[in-house]
Length: 294
Image 1 (cartoon, one colour):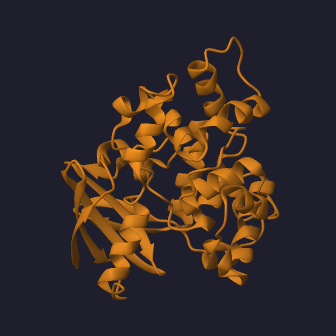
Image 2 (image 1 turned 180 degrees about the horizontal axis):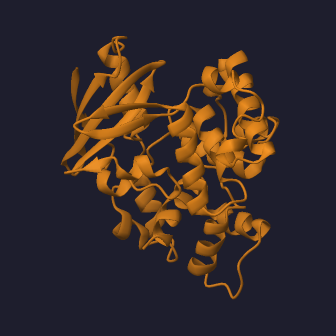
C-alpha cells in the first residue's frame, strides 16, 4: 500500500470529475462516501485507487496492488496518479481564458474543479470511442459495460466492484468478430480487435507526442479511427487539451446553445466557432459536455 497527499494546479472536485458523460455504469457507481474508486494500470501493473478531497486543491489517495505483482516505485505511482486525475492541468489559466468569453464565462462557476479522469492508455480511449460510434449515449454505455464484464478483470475495494479494462493482449487474441454476441457490429468488433493487434505489435502508439493536430492525423491512419474517434482518443487517452471533436452531436447542441444559433451547427461550423477556443478546445468541449447534463 502507498499513501499520497497530492496538490493540484488549482481546484479539484472529485465529485464532479467522476461523472463522465458516456462512461460505463461500473465507473459511474465507483464514487461512495466522498471517495472515488478506480482500478487502473501503472506500467502494466494492476492497481486499485481510493482517493478523496482533503482541500480545495488537495487530494488524499491510497493505492494498493490489485494482485500479487508489487506496485512500481513510489515516484512512478505518484506520476501515474497525477496523470490519471489531470492534477497538473492549469485550471486557473483555463478559467481566466473562459472569463474573457461572454458565452463561456459561466462554466467555471458551474463546474469549478472539474478535471478529466484519463483512460489508462490511448488504446483504451480509442476502443471506447469506437464503441461510441453511431449509437446513443445509453447504448454506448451498455456496450462498454459488456466489454468490461466479458473481457475485463473485476476487483473489489471497500465492497466497491471495480473493473479493469482488458489489455491489448486479451483483445488481440480474440477472433475478429468475437464481440458480435455483445451486440457490437461486425465493423466495431473488427476495428477493436484489429486495434489491439496494432498496439500490441507497436506499444509506441500509446506514447504519441506532438501537437494535437499532428496526433489526430496519425491516429486517423488506423483502421476504424475517423477524426472524431481520434480527437476523443487524444483528449481522454493522452490528455491533449487542444483538439476539437467537432462532429460530436452533444458538442453541436451545446455550441448552438452558447452561440445562440437558430439551427444546430454543422461540423465545419463548430470547427470555425471553436477555433477561438485554442489552446483549450478539448477542455472547453469537456466542460460543455458536462454543462449539457445540468
